[in-house]
Image (cartoon, rainbow, N blue to C red; front, side):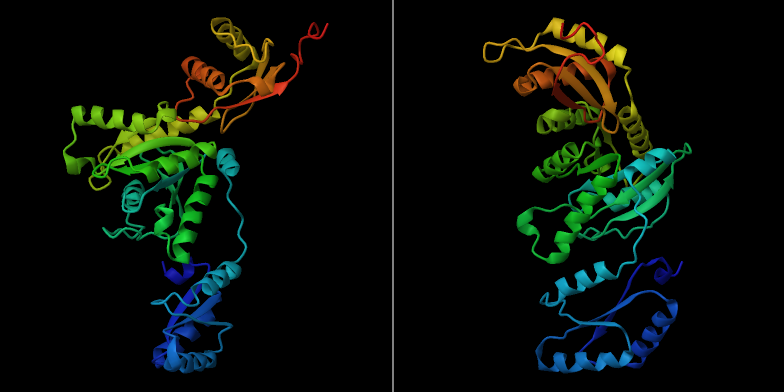
Length: 374
């Protein structure tokens, strides 16, 4: 397909020091007839020669003609703002829409050069994304529908790698980070792709925290496993390192794979769909309250300020992520350690592997027990 047909906005890059040439006139006319919004970025517009050459491009008759210098970063912010303002309004595809259609949205995130584009190309069965050994090849987020070998639908979201803040020196890199975070916001499940040769990095931990804060399902994937000749012993050691680095994610699934050879990629798709189903799980109120009585009898909440904390009732109010509303007489006195205890007991009884469980505590009696409050 013609790349112009796939684009929302076209950037026509021109050379200010050369001035308009025949090819520029031809491309401008071609793009004008395409009906696509066009932004003319006149590069090398710094210096006297560049400033003089820039003004000549108004003769092309294009609406947006911007002076930039890619070498020095001049005019880049204005260009990005112009592009964002020029993009035609589109119908946003939300995670809820994907749920209604039975399609799991998967954000593939991780550090630069972890192999995200290679993995998505392998899942798609075609080379849709540019891959390179140079970190940062991918700078935008791209949504791609996909049907795996078992006929299951996914929408894959490739994102630019999230870098350390100290290394985000150019405005375009900042937009890349924003795109990666927005991709996670739109996803049901986040695949955190790690590099087997690098091991777990602090940026991997940062990405996992973002997924946790967003209430997303999480699957750990270790790429380039073939490069280190990893066997079962190495898998055991690496797995322990992952759980040590992510102590609050030991319920998540972990897959070792090679995007280059395809080994383990099918298993990754299985784990993504299993995690998605866990996020959709809904436990009936009756079952939850029987579980709650057993959990509280086993380990009652500690007294707070010489008062007894009574946990009276629980109900699940939503899924993706599973959210439980718990009624108690002292919601503000529920300590984090007891929250963690209840969450662990929920996982032990009902699973919820790889997904966040949100526990909300509200002051009140059992709203369905007429004896309460007597």
